[in-house]
Image (tube, rainbow, N blue to C red; front, side, top):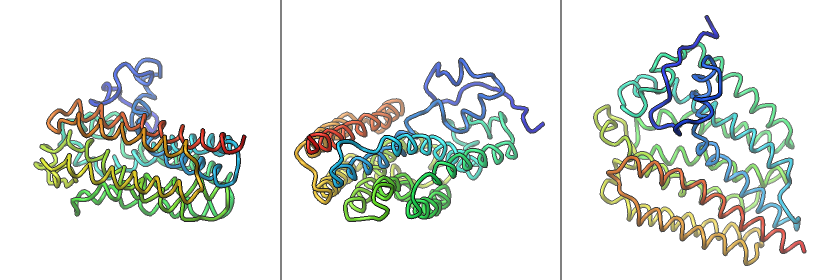
Length: 314
């Protein structure tokens, strides 16, 4: 039946004892796992460029804080579209996921949901995302529709290039355009530099994430920057995170930001440096913890931007 599911237990790398696995009815748990609700770091990473952009727009517009309605819409949209993206990715990658230790417990390869059920759930999540998108101005709506292109091609890139993380960055950083466009109905240099910085940041954190699967990826022929960089991962992260920081600082300059924004960026440098110094690429559990810590990095930058907007408004 279309709504019949089989709960075989949590996904291997999910947050343990999450409410998805303890509170939801067993028939709904596979769908929640398909959307990665028990791994909120994914939608936080998708959300941060949106919120950073909205905060920079508030600085540029001389407002005291980002538009709360826009922040709420971005939150709902990030949860919905991250879930839709994960569902789409799992449909495309089901044969690969079944061969990788960490991913074979995902709902489709584990038999918790059928492909038809996954497609129906994908449609529902995309519909929520569309409803959210239609709340913005026309320029933002068109921009949001264009974002579907990098989202659509990303799952296939690991088969053809050592840089699938670059294509993830193109998709996950798109919110850098959206927050600004929602406020002004156009783009400027600040969101462009923010987008470029987000791409570098995404390549960095997802390289750390990909080190969990490098052995299985090598066996099944999946490419990644983790395999490409190998033992040179730390120098690569230094370059990537340094570029991200420089680009974020340039975006702040273009938005006419004040000291608080740059203090936030500097505090973020300390956090990123801690990731690099701490990293052990052969410790999968640690790689996952460091990957998740980028949610904290997002808060650091956002706080700096919001405080700067408020101080300038006083």
